[in-house]
Image (cartoon, rainbow, N blue to C red):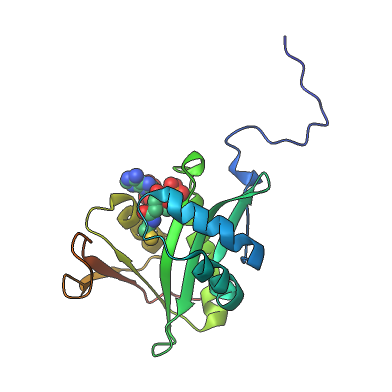
Length: 177
Ligand SMILES: CC(C)(COP(=O)(O)OP(=O)(O)OC[C@H]1O[C@@H](n2cnc3c(N)ncnc32)[C@H](O)[C@@H]1OP(=O)(O)O)[C@@H](O)C(=O)NCCC(=O)NCCS
């Protein structure tokens, strides 16, 4: 029979309580870029843009870390001309951590910050082929008891050939306590 130390500090594999969420710092930028690149789904922006994001939009973003590495992130910002709306730009979860509620946890963390940000709506765009992304935002909206309104936002006239159109998901109004 295998013996197990009573003092083991390593959580069992798959234990999502070991994943910590916080606002990103500059040092998270390169890892966020890596997660975006390795998703093979997201548009990969420059490494510079992720580190800049960590400097200027940390308060509207989330990074998830486990075992000393980033395993997920959400980048967002408050729309300058609609200050009641938090726009979620990118969400990524490392393959090893998918299907365990991590994206939903990160969105909920942002949702919990929305009252202090003065936001009652969350927006994001989703490509028609990204069922996981659509399900994730629907899940968040359901959890908050809010409707999701879908409408076309960016099409062929805005995006290069071969890029799927981007459908706007507008979630809200959130009922803050
Ligand atoms: C989309 C993504 C972030 C989801 O991360 P995740 O941690 O696995 O998602 P969660 O486990 O929190 O699931 C959230 C909801 O989405 C659903 N979902 C997740 N992956 C799904 C999939 N592949 N197909 C259908 N539904 C899916 C879950 O069932 C859950 O819904 P529920 O609460 O109704 O059960 C992840 O698949 C990913 O990084 N994909 C590549 C990048 C991307 O597409 N980002 C989104 C666009 S910005």
